[in-house]
Length: 192
Image (cartoon, rainbow, N blue to C red; front, side, top):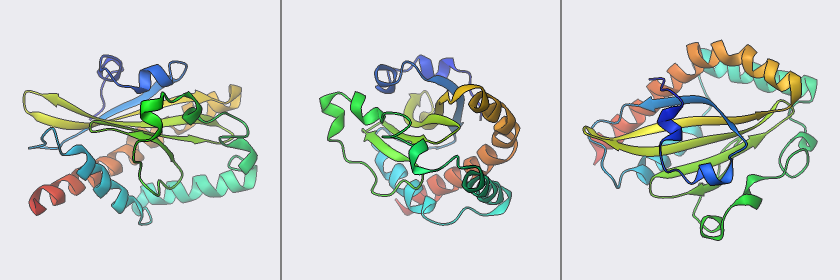
């Protein structure tokens, strides 16, 4: 379920102090019925284990097309990423976040930090510098997983690119991710 920007901005996330110059692109909440305060790391590990497999369906096809276009147009060359075109956000991390355990393999993301209720990973290419932020948020029904995508587009082309892919993110990628991550939560809940 898509949420307003305030759903991210109103939370006391550590990412706010690290990336104040990034704009919030998307906020989504995933149904995690029965989620408790100590379940975030287990869910994160399950999601990462699932992500190790190749994306399927239309969403998987879109990712394959995107990576192929990036190869053809040079959007994903080494000189467009972190440490070359942009400085990694790891350089901004306060000392207490630098040594957190992070997932070993994030695919295209590089982990920044993971806490008991918060994860952040970054990606940079020729179109943008982005952050995927995952948070574990309580309400009167339990804890829920939220994902915020924060970006700094790379010039006019990056802004155009982000606008161009928005319908695909909203109509295909995020719904597929929602089904997948909610299924992962359900499988994890049954196994407990």
